Length: 345
Image (cartoon, rainbow, N blue to C red; front, side):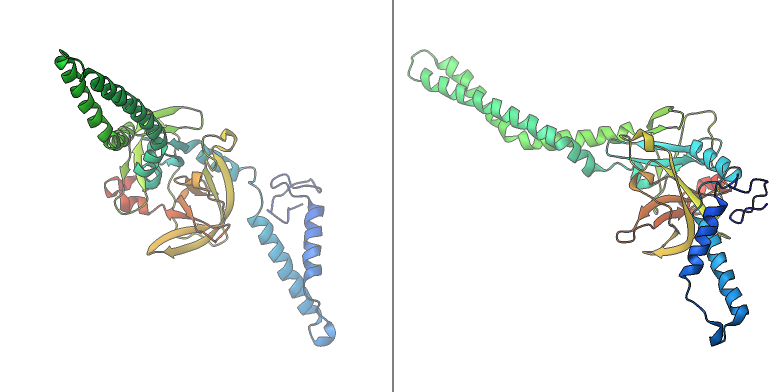
């Protein structure tokens, strides 16, 4: 028999061996949808032809709904998704995390600019509390030393022959007072040094097999939320570039990424699925729209087709629009890095 959901031919009449649907359950779903349809009375002129048309439309709707929300099928879809997962990378920085993917066999990688660009404010907030606590302790120690030196000086002033000692204490008091006056500047200088060190340190890229590449730096696009980097490896699994042109609304797409960050290893390199919902203009830029879940940790990861071709770089969700995600069209990589157009050709 042929599966009414995915079209797979098989001998099993209970469950589809390709998409896993139970035929009896599918028939029940179709029956419920038919029962929910508005009744049509032949006496009003609908007739048998009209009734047959209603049933046909209801069955078609059920078919496409189940097809759009079906799990990953065995065969080509699964192989393509697994290949894309192998080429997706986890990116960690001193201020956060995100995703990326390898785009060619020379180990060039693509991610979002905001994932790898040094975020000075986040680096500062991460160090400021510890620095301020340290400075508070230093100030307390300096104030105690100042009070002790001033007390000693007051006692020596009443004693003859202590002028050299008084001069030493006066010099010490002035140095302590200068140190107290520059404590705030020291905090800012230390934070600036931390930001510079973070920028020089780069970010770490981790592959699916656990291989880590620390100290990676990226070329940042001046005009879009894209960044290009290269791993120091001889060979890498990669995702071939596709095209957004010719995509059909309702076509199945997949996202790969790390939605929960480094603290949730079980969710690293997670695959989610949805459908292509078209192209959308947002603030003068074009985005690929999908209902596949895209969480903050998915930023920079690939949006791929069932053929395993990357069509977008996951980048954001819009507040108030639950269940909608957006990706930068893959064609923008060539515009952002014109000297590397071969990456997507």
